[in-house]
Image (tube, rainbow over all chains, first blue to last red; front, side, top):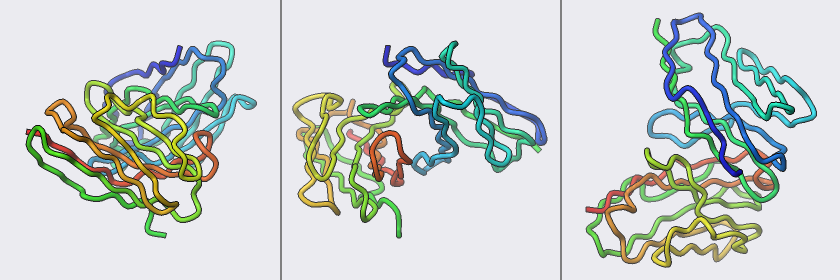
Amino acid sequence: QQQVKQSPQSLIVQKGGISIINCAYENTAFDYFPWYQQFPGKGPALLIAIRPDVSEKKEGRFTISFNKSAKQFSLHIMDSQPGDSATYFCAAANTDKLIFGTGTRLQVFP
Amino acid sequence: DAGVIQSPRHEVTEMGQEVTLRCKPISGHDYLFWYRQTMMRGLELLIYFNNNVPIDDSGMPEDRFSAKMPNASFSTLKIQPSEPRDSAVYFCASSWGGFREKLFFGSGTQLSVL
Protein backbone atom coordinates (compact mmCIF):
# COMPACT_ATOMS: atom_id res chain seq x y z
CA GLN A 1 0.00 0.00 0.00
CA GLN A 2 3.01 2.24 0.36
CA GLN A 3 4.23 1.85 -3.21
CA VAL A 4 4.18 4.45 -5.91
CA LYS A 5 4.33 2.88 -9.37
CA GLN A 6 5.94 4.94 -12.12
CA SER A 7 6.16 4.41 -15.86
CA PRO A 8 7.85 4.39 -18.26
CA GLN A 9 11.31 3.57 -16.96
CA SER A 10 12.88 5.52 -19.81
CA LEU A 11 11.60 7.93 -22.42
CA ILE A 12 13.13 9.36 -25.58
CA VAL A 13 11.51 12.45 -27.04
CA GLN A 14 12.31 14.75 -29.93
CA LYS A 15 12.92 18.41 -29.15
CA GLY A 16 9.61 20.24 -29.16
CA GLY A 17 7.61 17.11 -28.38
CA ILE A 18 5.51 16.25 -25.34
CA SER A 19 6.92 14.06 -22.58
CA ILE A 20 4.41 12.18 -20.44
CA ILE A 21 5.24 10.26 -17.27
CA ASN A 22 2.61 8.37 -15.29
CA CYS A 23 2.31 7.38 -11.65
CA ALA A 24 -0.16 5.45 -9.54
CA TYR A 25 -0.55 5.07 -5.81
CA GLU A 26 -2.64 2.88 -3.52
CA ASN A 27 -2.74 4.55 -0.14
CA THR A 28 -5.61 7.04 0.00
CA ALA A 29 -3.95 8.69 2.99
CA PHE A 30 -1.47 10.38 0.67
CA ASP A 31 -2.38 14.05 0.20
CA TYR A 32 0.59 15.67 -1.47
CA PHE A 33 2.06 14.65 -4.83
CA PRO A 34 5.35 16.24 -5.88
CA TRP A 35 7.58 15.65 -8.86
CA TYR A 36 11.34 15.87 -8.45
CA GLN A 37 13.93 16.33 -11.18
CA GLN A 38 17.44 14.93 -10.83
CA PHE A 39 20.47 15.67 -12.98
CA PRO A 40 23.54 13.39 -12.89
CA GLY A 41 25.70 14.01 -9.84
CA LYS A 42 23.06 16.16 -8.16
CA GLY A 43 20.35 15.63 -5.61
CA PRO A 44 16.69 15.64 -6.60
CA ALA A 45 15.06 19.08 -6.84
CA LEU A 46 11.37 19.86 -6.56
CA LEU A 47 9.88 20.64 -9.94
CA ILE A 48 6.15 20.96 -9.28
CA ALA A 49 3.64 19.58 -6.78
CA ILE A 50 -0.12 19.16 -6.45
CA ARG A 51 -2.58 18.58 -3.63
CA PRO A 52 -5.70 16.46 -4.27
CA ASP A 53 -8.18 19.32 -4.08
CA VAL A 54 -7.33 20.26 -7.69
CA SER A 55 -7.18 18.15 -10.84
CA GLU A 56 -4.47 20.05 -12.67
CA LYS A 57 -1.57 22.36 -11.94
CA LYS A 58 0.53 24.13 -14.52
CA GLU A 59 3.86 25.88 -14.13
CA GLY A 60 5.37 27.03 -17.39
CA ARG A 61 5.89 24.00 -19.64
CA PHE A 62 5.22 21.55 -16.80
CA THR A 63 1.72 20.30 -15.94
CA ILE A 64 0.52 17.79 -13.37
CA SER A 65 -2.77 16.05 -14.07
CA PHE A 66 -4.37 14.37 -11.05
CA ASN A 67 -7.17 11.78 -11.02
CA LYS A 68 -8.18 11.18 -7.42
CA SER A 69 -10.74 8.45 -8.13
CA ALA A 70 -8.25 6.44 -10.19
CA LYS A 71 -5.40 7.22 -7.79
CA GLN A 72 -3.23 8.28 -10.70
CA PHE A 73 -1.27 11.37 -11.61
CA SER A 74 0.97 12.34 -14.47
CA LEU A 75 3.57 14.88 -15.51
CA HIS A 76 3.38 16.49 -18.93
CA ILE A 77 6.35 18.41 -20.29
CA MET A 78 5.33 20.54 -23.24
CA ASP A 79 7.82 21.67 -25.88
CA SER A 80 10.48 19.37 -24.42
CA GLN A 81 14.04 20.72 -24.58
CA PRO A 82 17.44 19.01 -24.43
CA GLY A 83 17.96 20.75 -21.07
CA ASP A 84 15.01 18.75 -19.72
CA SER A 85 17.06 15.56 -20.07
CA ALA A 86 17.16 14.21 -16.52
CA THR A 87 15.59 11.60 -14.28
CA TYR A 88 12.11 12.42 -13.00
CA PHE A 89 10.64 11.00 -9.81
CA CYS A 90 7.01 11.18 -8.81
CA ALA A 91 6.23 10.90 -5.13
CA ALA A 92 3.35 10.69 -2.71
CA ALA A 93 3.33 12.02 0.82
CA ASN A 94 1.38 12.48 3.99
CA THR A 95 2.49 13.73 7.39
CA ASP A 96 4.55 10.59 8.08
CA LYS A 97 6.10 9.62 4.77
CA LEU A 98 7.31 10.66 1.34
CA ILE A 99 7.47 7.66 -0.99
CA PHE A 100 9.27 8.04 -4.30
CA GLY A 101 8.49 6.27 -7.55
CA THR A 102 11.22 4.34 -9.31
CA GLY A 103 12.15 7.16 -11.68
CA THR A 104 11.95 7.87 -15.42
CA ARG A 105 15.04 8.72 -17.38
CA LEU A 106 14.08 11.28 -20.00
CA GLN A 107 16.29 12.00 -23.00
CA VAL A 108 15.36 14.85 -25.33
CA PHE A 109 17.17 14.86 -28.65
CA PRO A 110 17.62 17.97 -30.82
CA ASP B 1 21.87 30.38 1.58
CA ALA B 2 24.32 27.79 0.26
CA GLY B 3 21.75 25.03 0.35
CA VAL B 4 22.17 21.66 2.05
CA ILE B 5 25.84 20.83 2.35
CA GLN B 6 27.07 17.25 2.49
CA SER B 7 30.57 15.92 2.98
CA PRO B 8 32.47 14.12 1.74
CA ARG B 9 31.29 14.03 -1.89
CA HIS B 10 32.98 10.69 -2.43
CA GLU B 11 34.09 8.06 0.03
CA VAL B 12 35.94 4.88 -0.80
CA THR B 13 36.58 2.53 2.07
CA GLU B 14 37.27 -1.09 2.77
CA MET B 15 34.80 -3.54 4.22
CA GLY B 16 34.73 -3.41 7.99
CA GLN B 17 35.77 0.22 8.28
CA GLU B 18 33.69 2.92 9.94
CA VAL B 19 32.17 5.52 7.66
CA THR B 20 30.77 8.88 8.76
CA LEU B 21 28.71 11.07 6.45
CA ARG B 22 28.00 14.67 7.36
CA CYS B 23 25.21 17.10 6.61
CA LYS B 24 24.54 20.77 7.23
CA PRO B 25 20.86 21.60 6.58
CA ILE B 26 19.48 24.92 5.45
CA SER B 27 19.31 27.37 8.32
CA GLY B 28 15.82 27.59 9.80
CA HIS B 29 14.59 24.26 8.49
CA ASP B 30 13.02 22.08 11.16
CA TYR B 31 13.11 18.72 9.37
CA LEU B 32 16.14 16.74 8.26
CA PHE B 33 16.03 13.55 6.21
CA TRP B 34 18.58 10.94 5.23
CA TYR B 35 17.87 9.06 1.98
CA ARG B 36 19.81 6.33 0.18
CA GLN B 37 19.72 5.91 -3.59
CA THR B 38 20.58 2.70 -5.45
CA MET B 39 19.68 1.39 -8.88
CA MET B 40 17.90 -1.58 -7.37
CA ARG B 41 15.89 0.12 -4.62
CA GLY B 42 15.63 3.72 -5.80
CA LEU B 43 15.32 6.46 -3.18
CA GLU B 44 14.75 5.06 0.29
CA LEU B 45 14.16 7.05 3.46
CA LEU B 46 16.52 5.93 6.20
CA ILE B 47 15.64 8.26 9.06
CA TYR B 48 14.25 11.70 9.69
CA PHE B 49 14.50 14.28 12.45
CA ASN B 50 12.16 17.02 13.58
CA ASN B 51 13.72 19.80 15.65
CA ASN B 52 16.83 17.62 16.11
CA VAL B 53 14.81 14.68 17.51
CA PRO B 54 14.77 11.37 15.58
CA ILE B 55 11.17 10.62 14.64
CA ASP B 56 11.28 7.51 12.48
CA ASP B 57 14.31 5.31 11.96
CA SER B 58 12.41 2.31 10.59
CA GLY B 59 14.21 2.67 7.28
CA MET B 60 17.64 2.14 8.79
CA PRO B 61 18.62 -1.23 7.34
CA GLU B 62 20.55 -2.63 10.27
CA ASP B 63 22.07 -1.81 13.63
CA ARG B 64 25.27 -1.02 11.78
CA PHE B 65 23.62 2.25 10.77
CA SER B 66 23.18 5.12 13.21
CA ALA B 67 22.34 8.80 12.84
CA LYS B 68 22.60 11.78 15.12
CA MET B 69 21.60 15.41 15.06
CA PRO B 70 23.36 17.14 17.97
CA ASN B 71 22.13 20.59 16.92
CA ALA B 72 20.01 22.31 14.29
CA SER B 73 22.92 22.81 11.92
CA PHE B 74 24.58 19.41 11.82
CA SER B 75 23.77 15.75 11.37
CA THR B 76 25.81 12.59 10.85
CA LEU B 77 25.06 9.17 9.43
CA LYS B 78 27.46 6.49 10.57
CA ILE B 79 27.98 2.97 9.26
CA GLN B 80 30.03 0.65 11.43
CA PRO B 81 31.20 -1.79 10.19
CA SER B 82 30.65 -1.03 6.52
CA GLU B 83 29.87 -3.74 3.96
CA PRO B 84 29.99 -3.77 0.13
CA ARG B 85 26.17 -3.80 -0.05
CA ASP B 86 26.17 -0.37 1.65
CA SER B 87 27.63 1.12 -1.54
CA ALA B 88 25.15 3.77 -2.69
CA VAL B 89 24.59 7.51 -2.90
CA TYR B 90 23.47 8.92 0.44
CA PHE B 91 21.45 12.13 0.38
CA CYS B 92 20.63 14.51 3.14
CA ALA B 93 17.62 16.79 2.71
CA SER B 94 15.92 19.42 4.81
CA SER B 95 12.56 21.18 4.76
CA TRP B 96 10.44 23.67 6.64
CA GLY B 97 7.32 21.77 7.67
CA GLY B 98 8.00 18.12 6.83
CA PHE B 99 7.23 15.75 3.99
CA ARG B 100 4.44 17.82 2.50
CA GLU B 101 6.68 20.76 1.85
CA LYS B 102 9.59 21.27 -0.51
CA LEU B 103 12.55 19.09 0.35
CA PHE B 104 15.95 20.60 -0.42
CA PHE B 105 18.49 17.89 -1.19
CA GLY B 106 22.24 18.08 -0.90
CA SER B 107 24.48 16.83 -3.70
CA GLY B 108 24.95 13.50 -1.98
CA THR B 109 27.84 11.32 -0.84
CA GLN B 110 28.86 8.56 -3.23
CA LEU B 111 29.96 5.69 -0.98
CA SER B 112 31.94 2.76 -2.31
CA VAL B 113 32.76 -0.08 0.07
CA LEU B 114 35.35 -2.46 -1.36
